[in-house]
Length: 111
Image 1 (tube, one colour):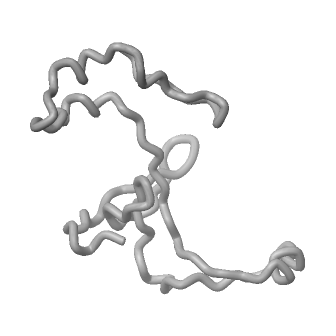
Image 2: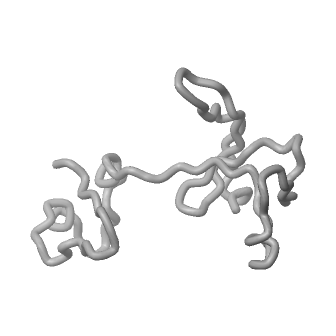
C-alpha cells in the first residue's frame, strides 16, 4: 500500500478506517518499526539561525549580510522533524547540491 500524501491543511486522515497494522497490534505492544518504513520525512540542512525585527526584515536589500548563530567553520546540520540528527558536508552533485553525512549525533547531542 502506498503512503498517504496530504496535499494541504484541508485534508484530514481517516482514522476510523480499518487499518491492518492497528488490527495486528494490541494495547501493550508497540507498532513494529516496519510499519513506518514507507513514511516520507522532510530533510533540511541548517546553516544557522537568527532573530531579526520586522523593521530589519523589510529593510533587507540585495547584498545585505545576515549574521547567523554558527561559525563559518561549523558544518551544516541535518534536521528531520525539528531534530538535529547529523552534521553534514555540502557537496556538488549533478544538477545541484547534496549533503554528505559527516557525523551522526548521539541521542543526547540532538537539538
